[in-house]
Length: 476
Image (cartoon, rainbow, N blue to C red):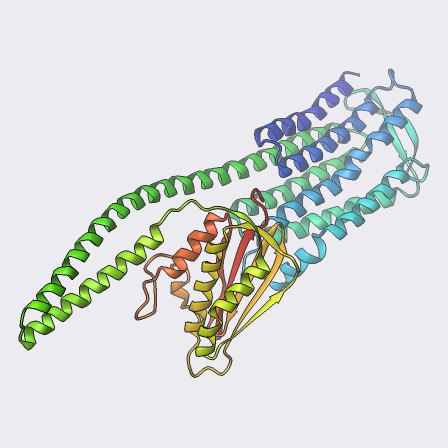
C-alpha cells in the first residue's frame, strides 16, 4: 500500500508543474495544451498506482479503475499530436527547408491526421474495456522487494495497443526531422527536446509490462521526463520573452535617437531654407562671371540635395498615431493597382492580382498599408530592365494561421545576396537617385501592424516578397 501511495503522489507532480506553468503564462493556448498533456500523464500514473492496493481494492474495482485510467497513456498520444500542430501552425519553416521535410510537415502534421488519430485512440481505449484488450488482473509477487500487487492479464488484441504506441514513436521520429527546419531557434530547440523526452517517456512506460521492477522505474522515468518537458517549455518562453524585451529596449533607444534626429532635422531644415533664400537673392541682384555662376550652381544643387534628404528622413521619422480598422484587403490592393497602373503602363509592366480567398479582412491602417504596396510595386517596376521580355508583377493574397499572407513577385534583376540583410535598412539603395527609405518605411509600417516582411527569394529572374499581417488586433 505504501508503494501505491508513493506512485500516486509521484503521479501528481506532472499536473502540479503544469498548473504552475499555466498560471505563469496566463493561460496561453500552448500552456493549456501542455496542461492537458500533463493531466493525462498523471492519469497514466493513477492507472499504475491502483495496481498496488491489492489489500484495499478488490480485483473487480482495481480492474475497473485500471481500465478507466488507461485513458492516460492512450489519449496522451493525441494530446502531444495536438500540441505539436499548434506550434507548427504558428511557426514558419526555414526558407531553405528540404522538399522532403516540407512534404512530411504538410502530410503528417495536420488536423485531418489528428482527427483520425483521435478516432483511432477512442477505438483502442474502448477495446481495453473488453476481454480482447485486458482479460483481468492477477496477483504477482515482486521477488526483489517482496511486494504483492495486481498485474494485468492482456487479451489477444493487446498487439493493437502496442501498434498504437509504435505509430506514435514513428511520429516522434518524424517530428525530430521537421523540428530542425523551424525558423525560430527557440521553438526549434523546444520541439526537438519535446520529441526526445516524449520518446524516453514512452519507452519508460513500456517498462510497465515487466512485472518485476518495471513499474517502479517507469514511474520515476515519467516524473523525470515530464519535468524536463516543463523545463524546456518554460525555457523557450523565457528566451522568447528576453528576445522581445531586447527588441523593446532597442526600440526605446531608437525612439530616443529619433527624437534627437527630429530636432536636428528641424534645425538643418531652417538653415537650408536660409541658404536657399540668400542664394536666390544674391543670384537675382548680382552679376556673376561664368566661374562664380558654376560655384553658385553647385551651392544650389548641394542645398537642394540636403533639402531632399531632410524631407525624406523627416517623413521616415514621423511618428503619427495610427488608427486601425477592419479593412477589405482585396479591395485595398485593387485600389493600389489602380493608382500605380499608369506608371506600370509607362514601363510596359503588367500587374496581376490573384486571390486565394474572397473577402479577406484585416485590422490595419489603410493609408499606410496602401503606401507600403505602392512603394513595393514602384520598386518592382523600376527593377525590371528595359530589355526584359517578361515584364510582370504577380501579387497573391491568402489567409494562413490568423494572418493575411501576401506575396509580391516581380521579373526584375533581383537583389544581390550580400544586400539581402540590409535591404530594409534606411539609406540603403542601389538606385542612382534613390534615397533608400522606401523599403525602410515598408518594414517600419509592417512591424507597427505586428506583422513581418521578408525577401522569400531573389535571383536574376526576379524577387519575391512575403508580407504577413495579423487578421485581428490581438492575433498571436
